[in-house]
Amino acid sequence: MSLASVRKQFSVDDYNRMREVGILAEDDRLELLAGEIYTMSPVGPLHVALVNRLNRLLQRQVGEQGIVSVQNPIRLDQRSEPQPDLAILAPRADFYSGALATADDVLLLIEVADSSLAYDRDGKLPLYARARMSEVWLLDVVSRTLTQYTQPRHNSYAQRQAFGMGMSLRATLLPSVVVAVDEVFA
Image 1 (cartoon, helix red, strand yellow):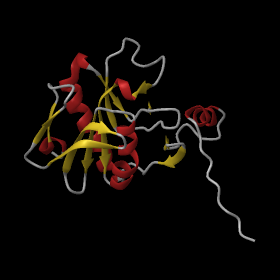
Image 2 (image 1 turned 90 degrees about the vertical axis):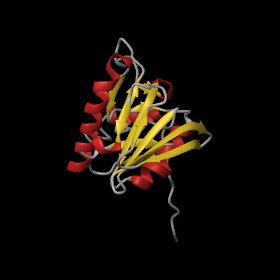
Image 3 (image 1 turned 30 degrees about the vertical axis):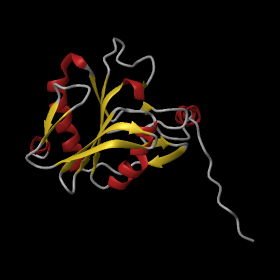
Image 4 (image 1 turned 30 degrees about the horizontal axis):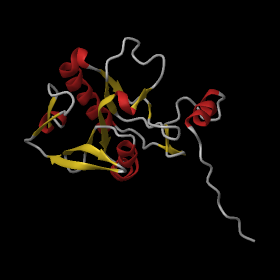
């Protein structure tokens, strides 16, 4: 007799309750995507350095126009609560202490993909598009490119443009934010 495997779908409320009661530890690197709980890739020194460098570059340019949020959860819908590497959120007096940011609050989201390129591009990007997140940047560490995704449509983005070394890109909703790919990998 063989047993069929069964997948359990979780809501954001289920997921957060599991954290509250200790089923999922606070320091577990997990995220909820489309109702399924995923273990996030371990973070190595290069990933940490790139996130820190982007954080510094963005903090300098964003100023009072937004809040740079590093590796904090964003509630996309009732079944998804990813933890992107960086997000620039619309400014709020409470700094989101009353509730997590949602897709509507995100002015720019950035994922740093060293060992997680397929996971970020094929798993998370469609969820961001479905949530109508206006702009996502995907930093591919291996190819040293920064790809800008804009104009969300259903499960994908209508516009995709890759920027390599020697090139710069400007955030759509924050035109004062310009990032040179060389600076990210300096």
